[in-house]
Image (tube, rainbow over all chains, first blue to last red; front, side, top):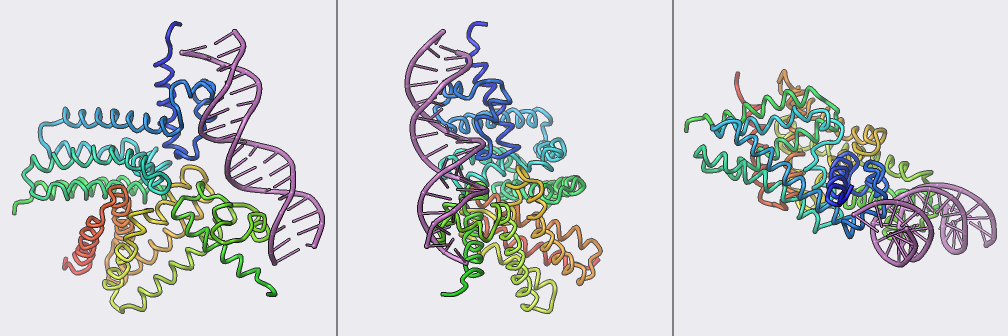
Length: 192
Length: 192
DNA sequence: GTCTATATGTAGATAGAC
DNA sequence: GTCTATCTACATATAGAC
């Protein structure tokens, strides 16, 4: 047995990460997290002072998770155009979760924008991580409007998830994923 | 004095409509609506049996509101392409609200998708209203993929609002609004 | 480090006087 | 139709025994 402390801390973060995604932050209670982990409610306060601190830990965890995902894209190809295409695969890899709960990054940002300026700013870091990496890929390809293209690609992915989730339309994900890949090829292969 | 009943009912709906947008549905309490209307909490139950019934009334109210907005687009031009361009003006007309709280339709849909399948389905009606009208415009212009174009335009607008709200970026709204208009012209003016 | 009992506030909802 | 008082459930958070 011994020290299970950090193990429990991570188990709380894992469960909260999933529940915040599936139910939203405000609609997830300590009881929900307790049920998912079999760790008693009162115990949470040994690891976190407030619910917001759990949220902050979840966002930090997502930053690490998505950084790892980006590293996988980096390792997947040494052509920046192909790395961008790899990145867009999240749409279909996670299509079932997207249909049920939307995008974890976008929906959390939208929720926090309405209620908590400080945590909204914290959650924004994930978007910044994505945007900066996407911009770097377009930069490598020599495009002078790399920053704008990065924002546009982010917006495309967010729009697809919101609409696909609203209409519960799997085929829309597949079709628009193909169109996003076409758009990337158009932007990165065109001669002008 | 006399019967102020329906007046009060509408005042509740008006206040709830705004608060559900600014704070989210679950984060808006009866107390919040009471404060905004000066109608006591307990009184709400004379008009609505549950909080969900208020939400349903708000969605119905939005359906009426957005139908009126669409009628204005109809009245604005007898060219379907120009009506589509008029429709996209919501982006800049409401830019301050979008930066603060996102899109009222998209954020409500995203919230309800996580917690309440039945009301999520109800809220979807607003998206359907938009999609069907957009499709009708593309149909008039003789495009055979009108349904897909309607979904794509919806997704573009949703993506722009999510990203603009996340980054609090007014300029992004303006730039991407211009690009959406270019896209509409490209799709509806191209000869092929 | 772990867990139970409990404090404190507020949510949605109800009952009944006026 | 209107309003107050109140109910029950559950939220986050704390205290303190083990």
